[in-house]
Image (tube, rainbow, N blue to C red):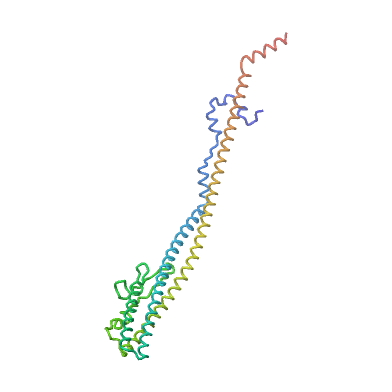
Length: 313
């Protein structure tokens, strides 16, 4: 049955013979690409936020890694220095005991000479420790392995904002810096009781100075160790945050992909529906046109009149 709104209710001559225009009029326009862009543009803040968080985490993680490296280097240098100072302290304590022995006991010249030789050897080892004490060519007890001058102060940056920098002390823990050169350079039979008395006081002062060096580097070592622990925990938290960000980005990208996929499927379904509708309408139009042509043909009219004439007769 043809509805009132059908094109066949009007003039039959208006039925299009060429179906190209009909096809173009019935085919829906579905632009999945524009729909995809529309969805993405509806959530620009999510894209920007994910990018900002990701970049911020990268900067913070990189900063923490650098700070951890600095703190680790500072801790290693402090540890090496402390061990060297302990050895130097033991040497000076041994020398102090030898000098006190001379002062408290009747000692022969031969014994004093033997003690002098021991002291010279001990002080030579003392200076070798100062020359060897370093971490990655950072010398902490003197300037270098060939220079007995005061060591450099080394700084380790643990934070940019707020700025946190820890620095080592500039010290000269060798016979030259601690006033022990005269004792080290005593000539044969030069260790007399008066010399032993004078040098004993100098050695005691040197031990106190080394004790101070040890205290400073121990405090520095503890601070570096505490910093490395804190930075390690902070790095783990950033890694966890980074994992969460990656998961969020993945879910967001999956959501966008799924939306685009749904739109594409909707477009395909609409296309199929349009094609089916187009085919049905064309078939219907073709059928109705043939029917009208049949009823309007001269043969049909002639047959009708002939039948009526016979009945009249």
